[in-house]
Length: 383
Ligand SMILES: [Mg+2]
Image: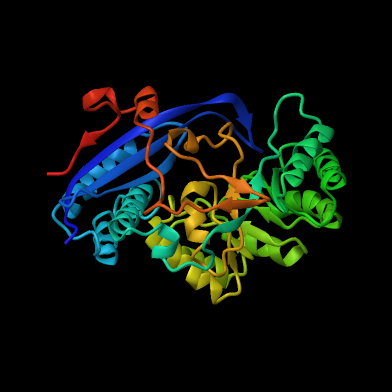
């Protein structure tokens, strides 16, 4: 039996090369919480979650104080039982935010561990829809000082030249007219055969303001408009979906399938962007995706293509993974000993067991936010 014998946790803070801006905030660095589960047979599973730009230490603290004793000595194949136990244990501290991200990291590590123990790449362990590669959209179109609409268009045309048939740009930071100019330049650069997605990052506050933008955008046929409002503002998502021809996408910071069912019942999303490192892990991500299929809703998981590529490759209603082509904005890949390749707009799946990558321990030592033995971030919190 694959009994969990020890647990290691840590956190790192990874600076961005260049301060980068969204509609409503700028980012200088990113904190990631990290988990390793070890079994008596010598297998190790890894898990992780983005914790934000400060307070990365909270994730290892949650693993240590809430969950470590629930896991030690348990069979790693009891994934559903362990999920339920963790969720129940953290009912007062968790349900959303960093504690749910700690559950997510542990759950990812369980699936990775079990797939590695079975000797199968994760997408095959989960039941693959695609064996070799999956479609991805190139994620970019950020605001940088001096970046004109023409430069934005050149960036997106570069993704199209690489073979990407879908791509995403940021919007909502500037005036409606200036944002229309950016979108116009983007469409001129890539044409109308490309799925062009737009991400607001919760930048708008009410429907009236939002319609000033969205009505100008409609004629350029965006593929979706992402996170127009704060995540909790379900009503406005549903109102906007009724008021515009542009499909509404949201869910990247949403947790639990119950809340996402409410959103779907209200008609607030045509696309869910549920992130397995946020929502409660691979277990909960699959619950959400399967529930969404009953609503005719697709799932396009947020960021972490290293994690989400095998999940997209095992879920029929998941048409794209989001891919950052470099590690300038979302720099998680910098922590890994192996990166995913893309070919003609598709991510080439790893064929080695589990997630197919490990951490680069030298890089973790460089960016360690928590300190354990060996000058790295890891602390043993298992028995
Ligand atoms: Mg987003």
